[in-house]
Image (cartoon, rainbow over all chains, first blue to last red; front, side, top):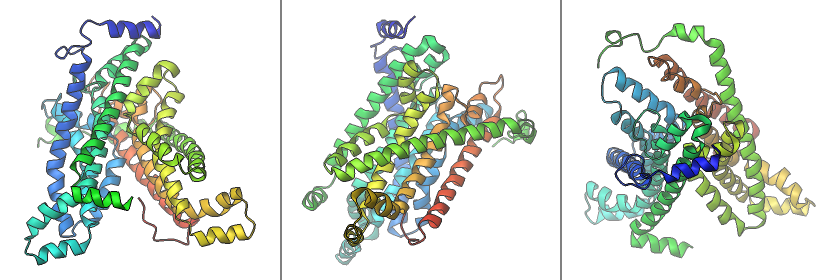
Length: 236
Length: 226
């Protein structure tokens, strides 16, 4: 079968546009997003409070600057497989938890580094002024540092989320889920007969990533405090 | 946590490493060549794009936007889209790998050149430097610390991504990671060798580039990596 015939056959599958069938692109897209968002939420809940606190008291600067580099050096592919192996060895569930843990670990460094950098880069006068008007330290963290650093934190979340989207697809190697990566990995298993599925899955993953990036840009704009947005606009 | 001895063979077997030393070296060399090729191609294209960005300022946001969008593409997705056209080949691997370096490299080259003090530029022009010589002999060398900072990020990222190219059967250290779960019983030694060597390679290359910066640009020891 030629590549185009394969692609046509792939698209003609009656369940291809199903929200509930495992062959469906909508089903796999939702699965992809669900996994990525869950990992991002867990990573954010674990990292942002810690980074906020450490940055407020100016502790752990070295960790903040090296976290992102360490994160980059760790191959996501290897991490997924390693976690999968450990889970199977300890006779734990191998379909969900290993992939989720690997994803959370990968999403943490950019969130940590950006939260830390966002807080540290704020002007000290602002913080001192708040302290002078009677803000407690936790109030400074939650009402000043967190919102003022939010554009930088969201930039980190964007990097983390797109990395998650890319990694969920790779997770299809060890997992019966894997979102849109499912088509690619299954296609590779078929060799040259799988090129239609590989291409379609790849294209769907590319489009999903670009849409998510666009969505994140809009969220960042909407979530930036109005005062900051005005300031940035004036700066040009 | 159960002890390794309780559940089957030990997690890591040096015996396997001993027996497969030649194979390990070969995969390591493949990994380095793939990374080097991607960085080399990426750097050449980036210099071209940076020259365009510097000469025609309006094109800079366009180039950043485009390379930024390309950077966002999932690696497996990019390979998947290319494989039907180029097969399981070097080309299918190299296009995405080189493309991912563009955003970081173009941005750092342009930022680096922009940081060159105007007095330096004016002095060179006053001495009769043409635009091309100004770029190659004054601006790019002075931008070197920032360019190398970008190269470090690109190199470390690429080394991690090359593990994924083992999906295309191109070898590299990802071969061990993948093969480790394709044996009848998973071989953890292979997985660990693949992951650890990949991380170690990233650290070594990062250090080597950092050292090269200190040697090539001794005048500035305080430029912060971005």
